[in-house]
Amino acid sequence: MTVRILSSPTTRRALASIAESQFGDMVKAVVDVRRRVIAVGGELHSDEEAALLEDGSRQEDLWGLNLYPAERGEAWIEFDSVINIRPSQGNRSRGVDDADLRRAIGEVVAVLVPE
Image 1 (cartoon, one colour):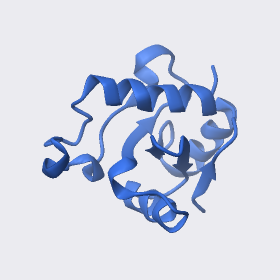
Image 2 (cartoon, one colour; image 1 turned 120 degrees about the vertical axis):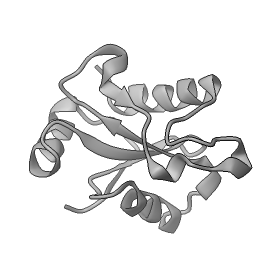
Image 3 (spheres, helix red, strand yellow; image 1 turned 90 degrees about the vertical axis):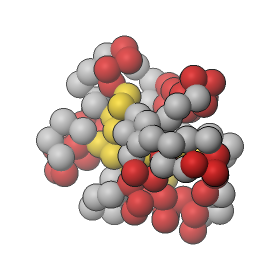
Image 4 (cartoon, helix red, strand yellow; image 1 turned 30 degrees about the horizontal axis):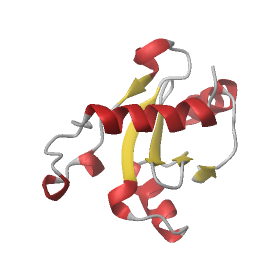
């Protein structure tokens, strides 16, 4: 599947279609918190990260997550990606350790994939 960069809103139904063709119930995504865009459709978070970098993003602004289109509330976003391990930015886990950053990522997702 081709990586798509979302800069305008899409639907959960569209994400569910991507999920069905790849992982079943989940879509890998990378959010650029500065540019407020999301890349989806890659087999790996690093595929989406590479597409965003090629599109002008900065690595320090990119955060990986998994989206579960059928879920609601907090269960629909899972902060888990190898690209998030960045000790130089104070993030030592596959998650996103900073609560403010998690909120910022969630805001981008909420705008681009409204409920």
